[in-house]
Image (cartoon, rainbow, N blue to C red; front, side):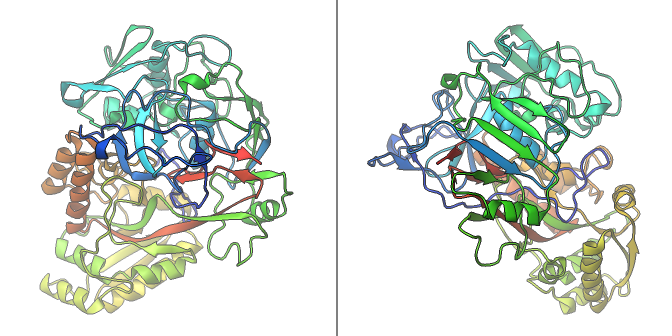
Length: 593
């Protein structure tokens, strides 16, 4: 999740979700034993194999992305496991609170965009959920999850044979070069810059230079089916970044970079047949899609109609009132706290913790004494802030969000639900900073309520707090340029790896506007821990090390996490096969019955 001047603003209502959805499915294809990314076998070669039943085996209730490991070439083969009792056909209506502003993979990065992208654009890699909920990174357009060399600075991918776009033209290795080159244009600043940042370095990837020429040798294509990436620095999980829309190919004949233009050809099972503004997008079948090469998508419905710009009440009423044969869902449309009441009218219902954490960043250049920062973290009442927000959620005291490999909840300062003003006052006294002055920035009405709660708690702890209210645009600009001591900035990412989250916010080599390091933290212990995690040999080992980074940042009290929002979704009773992951409600196994 990006909250910078070049990204989308993280407001109180922004969310992506990961949760448990109790939906029982069955599959016909058993999975054989595999090796995880540490090279060790998995329980005698049978742990991935579903127990046989009359109609197959159950599918996971949710994608447990926190278990992410690297899959094998066999895991990357298609077709995707069939869902028993599913049938081909039917129409799905998707109701979204936000407008779908683009169907260009170079600009698709938020929850709605990414979920639409999964249906339209295949990427080099993808995330595959096993029957027990564990998740593997597999090849999607590639034959496997990629081969690293040079200590993780070089990554090689081989394309599956016979891949085509929806117009029948072949997918070529050079199309992945063009896909990255075009995102260097300033018009792509709103998109996900994770891939180009990892490839070129953060300073070269901010989209402001206007130079659309990649440095020579950055991406090589020795033949039409081989793509070789040469990274700015070692990235053992670079292949995870390629699982999103930015890992999709774009042929060089595509020159249009206008927002929303559906000119990028499709490689997924659906193509964009209608794009009448951001409020109406219709997806129909791509006749060129080959299920035998696709390990992720079952593509049962005939069409998806996505309607954007709807209110919570619109989504609720239309889903609840849907007929018995009407398949209605929302990818990201959370109804929020008490949005349903006790009776959803027969519609399906699921709740999910978001994949980001509301946190208050501390400007470490203005609040230099770590004891003072620890006093802030000790006094800040997370549970009271949650109550003031009016959101449903769970108090959270560390920085790795749910669903990320290595995330483990802990409360370093023992602040609990309501903070500990006496302990915080003692820390201030020990630092000889009683009466320390703080400027607490805030924006909208919800932030104002939260800010009042925080001010009262910090005043009790011996601080002298001044509130500064700004409109949303000025708020993020002022936070970025360092005009507040304390301010809300959510921490999260759309990828289940710590490398896509913590360095973006706390790596001392970069700060605003190159990164989201608004706290301006520059600490050798944190930076060394980030470097160690970035050099891990496997996703499993990296998870352990990113957990250490989380603790190192909390020891410096550069940010105070407060809560993870919970989201509530509805779907009509005619729709089955839904699954929840980091981005929201996934339609990859959806079917109409």
